[in-house]
Length: 81
Image (cartoon, rainbow, N blue to C red; front, side, top):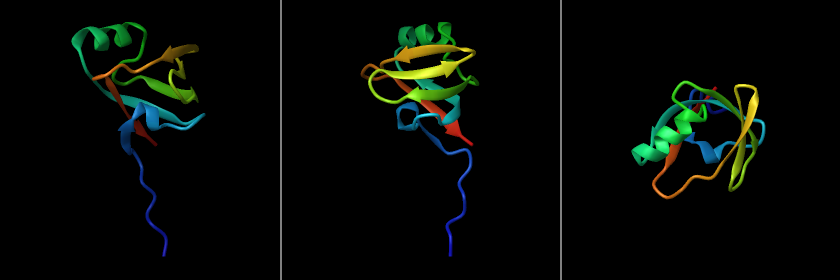
């Protein structure tokens, strides 16, 4: 018997594998850090693709590439399909 396929799993962005796509569902952390990410396009509802996992990780977002290093207390939650 096979386990059912899970859709829309919510997980931290740094759990994504290379070339895995997801939608940002929540940004948690200091207001200034969250605002900075939002200004770069990494906001709730954004569709992203993990280009290169690691620290920093590289995302494809709105036709551009964005290198992100999560600092202490900052978390980006995404939903995979």
